[in-house]
Length: 440
Ligand SMILES: Cc1ncc(COP(=O)(O)O)c(C=O)c1O
Image 1 (tube, protein in one colour):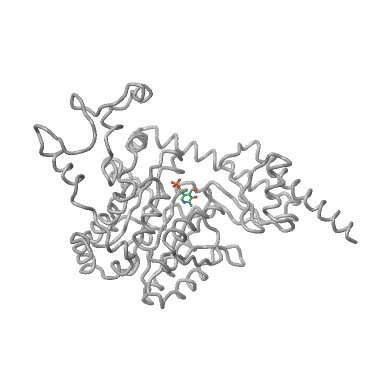
Image 2 (cartoon, rainbow, N blue to C red):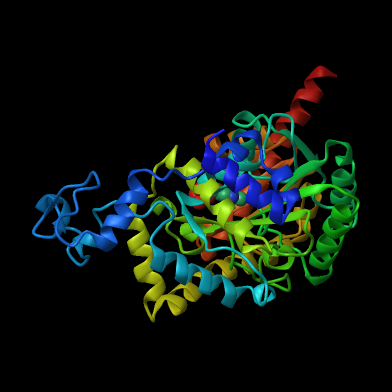
């Protein structure tokens, strides 16, 4: 093992041995090398005559660039666009994101957590966490309503054993008891990674106060029983809260709750700030010890250096510029209000009596989506029929569920959308009845 990695592990071991136990074999071996980037950072501060360290090209004290590229980016200083961004991301961006996190998550007050590290959006942040904490066969515990890409990130790449529990219980509230039991069942393995995503994709659900408290208590109890836990909060849709759910990340409530619980937050500008293609996200660790936080950051940077090397600089600059702008909050709130109006409209439409005969819907109060639970026809058959017959695209999940992204349908068109889904179901039922009649 590399000496720096060994030292990092020793310092983690001395501060909190459970964190070392939670690291994967790769995670234990990870370190950020004192290579070109470290030497170059040193030179950037001290080399006042010539800085001939890093592989970019400069002229007249500025990065070289082509006018054809700069002509559409002219309002930005070339130094904020063309050179490599630091491996952990632009420091002003990390700072402002941390401040935003504190302002939006009151429960973080007084807790110790690291500086957000910039990732190539949330998928990358999740895969950094998977690399750091997941060995083949380690259990990944998640609700059964989940973003399908977890299968690739954790299952396929890291050979995690995906163990799901039903998201809702029979009363249509969050199944915290199921989560607790599923976690406790991993005790013999010694460690587990719990992945919670609120506002949830695909259901659009975020827990209320009582459910959030129950989640925290359950995790505390599981930790007290001796299971080491990484708890990943996938906050992709953060801030899009429309009703009486909690309005902060569970990460804020899970940070520092128990030495066996390592809370990790994955968030980013992707969905919150409507910049899907920018690929700007963050991974943030919470631990009581600053030494552990520093070691985890080095390890995260090690895997990033070995994969993407560093994230794109222009989009970090764009996001930083937006966050610094006095109009940012108002503009963002206006867009969130538009999506909230759509969510309210969907709820209003779903109250139509005729709809109750063909579907139930899962509780939703946040995010981009809602999910129908079909009563009488198959979800994939309906999806294909809607596409071919009516030019309507929805996502089929399993046999019964249809995910509708109201985030991308105008409020005044939602009525027609649900009418067409309803009509599609009637068509399929009609065809089924005809078939049955012919068989008789
Ligand atoms: C729950 C969830 N997490 C993460 C992501 C990925 O986000 P990003 O585009 O920032 O990688 C998505 C995207 O659909 C998502 O739904």
